[in-house]
Image 1 (cartoon, rainbow, N blue to C red):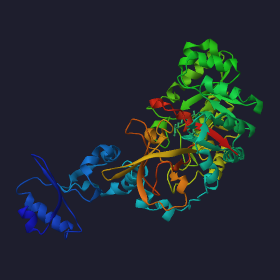
Image 2: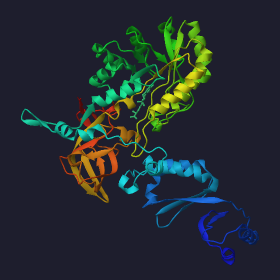
Image 3: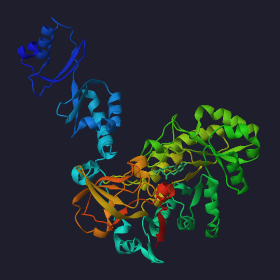
Length: 531
Ligand code: LLP
């Protein structure tokens, strides 16, 4: 350190071990040119071996109580794990944590860290008032068209629906209750049917199987993608809507499920060798579709990415020849190819890419007539995120179609048709101040909507009883379930909220009610449709 001092250089960060000491020099604090560093190194060489690493960058995470935050930073630490980190330093005031990496890494690293820390909510800092408008809103090339949600116009009707109604001598709870706006679903179905490059739409009914929704969708001329005998039977229940095309696309399903689909005349999709190897008689002289794994997954969360070696879906391409040989031997005709890489994709060119890949595989097989490009059409999941550009999706598929015009193209979206159409109404139960946090309890917990707990999903929450009032108070919006993961929204700014106020949780039409349970033996959330 005396040598550093002699050269007029002040050390910024330091890490030490028994055999070496790593220090960083901040060029903004020092008159640092290569001569100054070389002169220092020459003097240091007299007492140790010197290695100069440059240019470097220091990335500092700043926040209160960084030490207690470490367990929540694991995705961030994993990100650094991929880069070359020369030095990690934690400040003694517990306010920051600094990583020194190669400067060249910085441009790629910063957006990813931003995404992990702020957008994906690693720190649960969803407070829009704190962060202000998103980068995309401020500087994005495609300004985000903000569509006025239907529920703003329906405030009075929704408040009425959330009102407990008298039954017997008590009051029947009206919340938690899902409300679905059928006109929004019809509009979405029509927009998909209007895609000129797609021949047929199948609705992935796992997103929401409310009978009135199935009915409305069938009336719009959309078919159904089913994954269980229960889903197939639910579509049977709406037969009066007319002949409804169905697909059966299960995964690791028992033998009897395929037999059930065959009995009901529904074409099946296989995604493994096992069915052809173990139950060939079931598929002999039949047409099937084949789901392949294109080697990568996409989507809004790890748990919904359905491609690549780490996921259980799809036939790996190195087993394709064997599958085709087994099918030929068994007189099973592969008439369709299918891929679904994940859920919540906002990149409009994704489906065209899948099309190109499937088409080139289909050419090798020969008998394929249909390409099912999967679902996964995303809806914005954070404020400021742009909607999926359907026109761009259509145009990019049309372009690939010029190269492969011979196939009929299918899409099987779930979320995109129903997410915006559904809201979850809840009633505030209790408020509690604990430490620095304000907890706002409501009767809709993770039993009613599990997406925040399972995928860290972000759903807008408003106080419907005070919709016009300024959002002044920061709340942790929680449910009544006995788990600390029962948080519907962290750091949400709402008007001052009291017991009995109605909360609205938006964009809950997809994978809300269909994934709900009666955990803790709480009643299942009710649901109602409105026109
Ligand atoms: N096709 C297949 C083969 C699927 O597995 C899925 C969804 C879809 C289509 C429809 O995907 P969508 O268009 O809805 O993204 N519970 C999660 C989503 C799970 C998706 C499961 N598979 C969530 O709440 O985000």
